[in-house]
Length: 574
Picture (cartoon, rainbow, N blue to C red):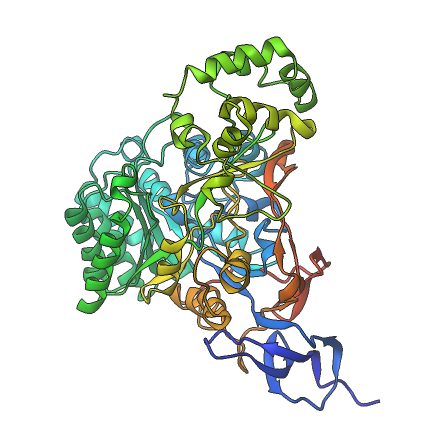
């Protein structure tokens, strides 16, 4: 019998190759982890996959995640695994676990817990701490095997503490000697395989003790020093999140990093993130205008953007709910869910808590949710562009109820398992039109999904699937976007943004990271609470329907949404 010419052949696929070109029908031959032939293939494959009627795309590349801890103890980078993601970039927002001296481990845990909502008990139980330098960390995770490839970035917060000790944690100005050492360590990290360096300049990022992130007030010379570390290495990207309180001065300083270093830089951008209420809902456009001007000057600056609103998940079995700040609820908060629901169902407890909540509209959480005007119930297939007419407050008015009363009753229904959604960015105008503008902007790149972080408050790792389903098929409250553009945005464009030149398109010689998708059936399911983190820690999971298969380096890692035994994913060093 003739020996198979290919490890796998995917037959009769409708191929969206990631270049933005229209779909075409072809077979794909895979050999030795690469796409080796595309077209009408007469040879045989050791595995033959019938993709007739299905879309075939490159694997999705997610450049904004926080799996820095999970890769040290786990094999499956969930929730991203369920969304066709085959490569992730971690270490964003200036937080991570290396470099780190033993005496500073608790400080970095507090920083990650506060900034990215990964509980201390989970991190303390899971992190093996078998490293000190960033190179040590890369060597450790380089031995790990997972269900997708992962890339690491050097976090400024950890680096600053490593170089400056408590001065760095306290936000003291860096001396010229400090800057020189950070520059040298950045070069070493990039030479060892890190793909970039990241920093945070937002007051929203604090440790679990309430202290600002160490990098908040880093001065111009320090940031340029990090950029010059990239320049010294001759490669690498720079990622920044900032409040832009003084837009002109802040942007000019960030642009100076790109100008002096000559390296690509990205800025996290969303409607409302850097503003103070809807009076400034177009503030993001002013930032984007400056990004356009910087690129016209010859700099390489992109905005990292999201395809939908960024929002918190609310419920009794997650971190946040509208009544959590009342004394009546606090007295029950530590009870197991079933016992808590039983107590909350008592009329006297209900009356007590509701009397407190109605009188406590000034609670920060209540203001965030707009007194329930900006809270929606999540159905089995969530609507992430909901109408104001279906919010909890609107539903309550239609029923002649006080909104808080309806919210309370819904929370304790179905054993306390219901979940709700409250967008706090990209939804100032009760639509996703701003996201459409960002997706289509030539200087924006998809990001901000935060896979691995905010484990029981935000579940945005589903962005990749949402990009296709909502914008390519389901949107009813505005214009859609063609599928070739959407696939390119989450494959070619994201890979290019971080310097990954071997993936993101389906062409001969490129890495065989591939999704086979039943597009008509593709759907995002409602988030669910699972308890699979170290120490029994909880997190939000979000599964899908419609992914028929996902391949990483030519090996099938998921089939019809379920994991196979293959773990071909590894650390990618540039």
